[in-house]
Structure formats: C-alpha cells, structure tokens
Image (cartoon, rainbow, N blue to C red; front, side):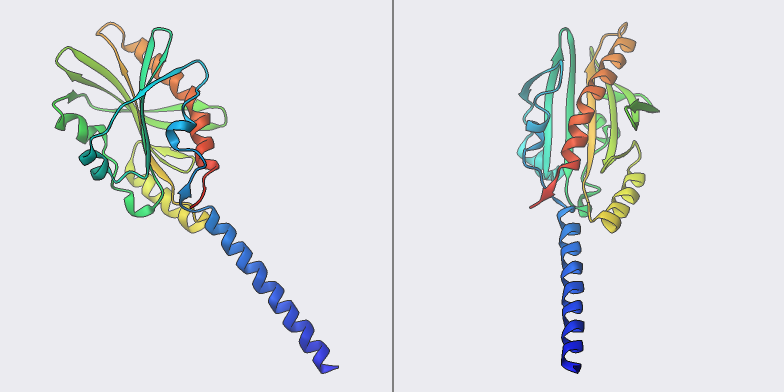
Length: 218
C-alpha cells in the first residue's frame, strides 16, 4: 500500500519537473535568436515602396557596431525617397554598440541641429522618436531615429537599457535595435520630407514589429 502511495508521489514529482522543464525551454525560445528570414528580407516587400540595392557597410564599421543583423537600404515611392538603417541585436551586452546620429554624423563632417522629441501613433502602437536636420555642404537630410527594445521605442538609450533588462527578466527576450530613417530635402521641402519619412515609417513598422515578434531561438 505504501509503495503505491510512494509511486504516485514520485509520478507527481516527475510530472511537475517535466512541466517546469517545458516552461523553462519555452522561455528560452523567446530569448535571443535568429528569425527565419534575415531582417533585410523581412523588409524587402513594403507596400507601395520599392527597395533599392543595399547600402554596403565597410568591414571596420560593421565590426565596430557589433551587428547581429541589419538593414541599410534606400526605398522609393513615386518621387519620394527614404533610407532605412536598422542595427538589430540579440544580446543585452551589446546595448552600447549602436551609434546615435549625434555622434556619427558630426564625425563624418555633417553639422546637425538640436534634436526634437515627437510621438507617432501607428495602429495600437505609439512610436517615440527624435528628429533633426543634418547638413553637409549643399546636402540636407531629415533624420528620424529611435532605439527599440521589443515593441518599446525611445529616443533615449537609457530608457531602452531598462526596457531590455525588464524584457530579459520577464520574457527572456533581449532583442534591441537602433532605427534611423533619412530623407533628403532642399531648403523649401522640409515639411514634405517629414511627411515622406512618417509615411514610410507607418509602412514598414508592421513588418519590423512582425520580425521582432516572430524571432525564434538559434
């Protein structure tokens, strides 16, 4: 009789251990990993836009940024043009690898104005981003940029550090990124450049958030 009770308890313990193991594996699968498609392929077919040739990154820059995945491509829609750069990372130790336009543009000879902070509603999401103008000789570009942790966005890296840490602890998901949209314009076209940039963000946003959601473990 005692043996039967012991066997039942042993069976119950084994079931509980198995359940815990499956839950742990499920949490791990939500962590850092690689999507079924590279990021650039996931953003190849954005409704209304034609993706151009990928902008190459020099080996030294690629290594300096410690990229896990990225896209750097020009997109066109009729006469509108926008360049998208996303540096995507899978581990929390790379949180400081991304370089803000406040650093990288001046180092390449551009002058920049003071960034302003904005919000953009996209469906049920609210995008928090920064906006600035970069100038190099006759060239002007409107730059819209932010940091990303899962589905949370912020123009401030420290907020994304906190969000990434919370995502790691709560979901075992360490994904984070730096996102930049650049739109060239002349002195009389800044408002149109902003409209172009925001329209493009609304178009690619569902594709990018889908990429984040569908990430699977290595």
